[in-house]
Length: 488
Image 1 (cartoon, one colour):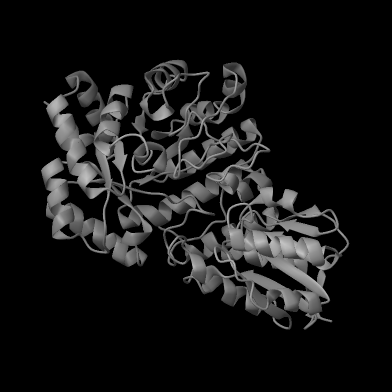
Image 2 (cartoon, one colour):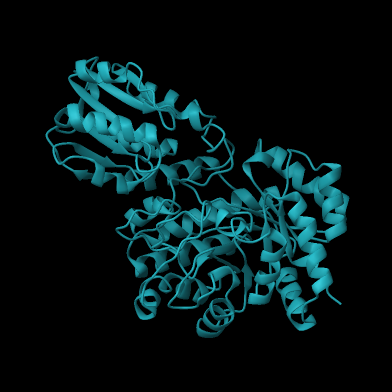
């Protein structure tokens, strides 16, 4: 008999495998571990973590990570920080997408990481989506499919499994599933034509895993995607003919926990047809879930099929060589292709480099616990100050509300460059953008570094540059386009 505990992937705590972590994996027989920022200090430390945990357990683990690039980065250094899917979408080149997948795999495999929970295949829409945004390749389903398939092949040709997400597609959601449960009300034919298309391409490319989404799709099923037999068994397995690993999204997200206990959610997930059940944060929920599944039981045919799919991905990997310098060149090339002038307002580009030009930075210190920045939370500001040497500087809050001296500095400046970190999400950035829109629009160039959808918040007189990312290469590419190279 197959132990249902084999079907679990857990997120754990600490930079080294603790007794509690080892005991958890021994007692549950969980097959997978999800590495999060809280587990990662350096690549060498990550490799040691994985090696020690597998050695103490005496068995291989399906070690996974969210390594999308762009928004989702777990390493502060030591791996290539790619600008993300939106930047690749702007480049429109499957060869670049393949190269990114290849480079990621060659950097992750030597660390013992067997699966990258990427690419995101959600198709962007005109409506602001707080959970996806620039994680998407864009609004063209066919292009997203081509880029996603190329990325998948690049990863899997180099011995790291890809995981396409979030099936059947949540690009049209207006609620972040980390917070609450979204509902997408689109007719089935329209949804299939647009949002299922990239997943068809991924399945055709032989993607090793597909992750489902915590979203309700009334035209497909009254049940949300994670718990839906119609979506998992009928659409994914049946209509798309997929026979690889089906992974749930984290069952600790608000879309789930506001309605169901984690253990109950895993039972529903298994019943829908998942092979791997992910619990990333709730330690008690992990043991409760395994105990419940062992007690409730599941068809042996389903358990053994899931176990076989997992076992296929646990083969030992030969770690290929990776060149960080080549990765850096590739990343910079993509970032440069991504920068566009989204609106030509009164301020002409490039903006003169002088003390009369005020460069406004988001205060990244406010979100140091929420996001990973290369070189730590001071990394982006240090780079911008170096690249914009000769200009004046100010910080604008992200989550705070106190604008401090910023309004007076903006009033006195002859020109303003505002690096905008998602004004639709963060109140401090919204306040700063409103102030500039009201008092300094004609002398401002806004540089959108986290959300292209902030364009609608900028008045027509304001010049807007869209960098589609805030990794250091994206900031450098954006300032290269926005700011003159010489002092005026």
